[in-house]
Amino acid sequence: MYRAFYGLKENPFNVSPDPRYLFLTKQIEETLSSLMYGIETKKGIIALTGEVGTGKTTLVNRLLDWLHQRGTKSAFLFNSRMNSSQLFDFVLAEFDIPCESRSKSQQLLKLNQWLLERFRAGETAVLILDEAQNLTFPVLEEIRLLTNLETSTEKLLQIVLSGQPELEEKLNLPQLRQLRQRIMIRCKTSHLTKEETHNYILERLKIGGAAAGQPHIFSSAATDTVHLYSLGVPRVINLLCEHSLINGYVEHQRPIQPKIVEDVAREFQLDVVEPTASPEALRTSAELYNSEAFIQNLGEALSRFRLSPTPSLRDKK
Picture 1 (spheres, rainbow, N blue to C red):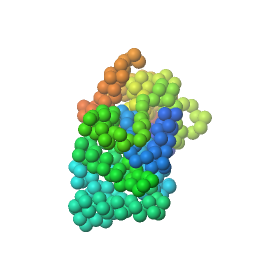
Picture 2: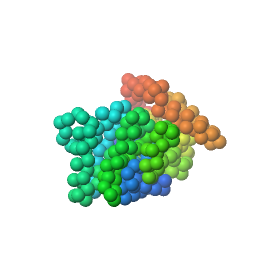
Picture 3: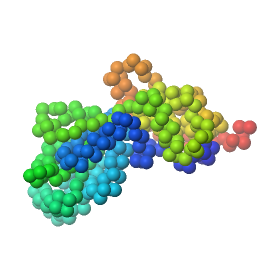
Picture 4: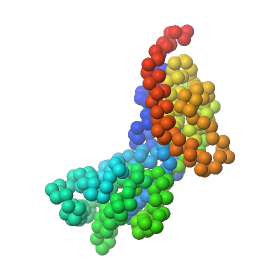
């Protein structure tokens, strides 16, 4: 409904991880380059970590696009709540490797044969595990053993472990010392700066169809307010901006001013964290946005919005 009012062709702040909307800050470019480099040079295991909502999944989707364009065989496992036997079931299924046996040794043999075929054909195979901080110790040990599938010159399977900062904490435990030693590249995503938040919003509006040269949909003060409440977390920026567009449409406001953003922030019970706050406080606030309570508030607010009649612009005149 608000798209026509703001001259947009699509919703630019959808929370789904569309790789077209990956915003390439210098840090994200470096992270993406590190992932590509690790795969191209067949380093074995790469770890990608970052706070909730900082763009890991969008980054991984861009990586998957890149792999697809290169004809690279890839498997993406998003279910991190699995046991070690299920790991092999999922890996074989994702790579489309037929295996009638449920025996782990037979499955491993099939996987090794398939990887050797890819090696002889000059192809690369990549396994990406999302939400890897939830993987159990036995599963992580099996992943370590997968790196034993190798030739005399290179690893046959490239593995990307993507997860929240708890993944780093888990990898630093003594029980996972051997796995930690096999991680050749570590990279991170982080919060956006104030300037990056401003450019992030403009870039997404542009991709969403905003005409070049048209007046800004968000005032500069409004984007500053978005950054203040979002802490530079892309997922929360999207939430604030999308609902600011909805409320701005209802209020017939263009460009959107700070009060609209503040009203949305209050609706979702977002608090301002002082710039001098400790990293622990910032992290706690970021985690709050992904908590069950926050998700419940989000659902309730959306329900109220859907049930409320939308005033027509004619009524505002």
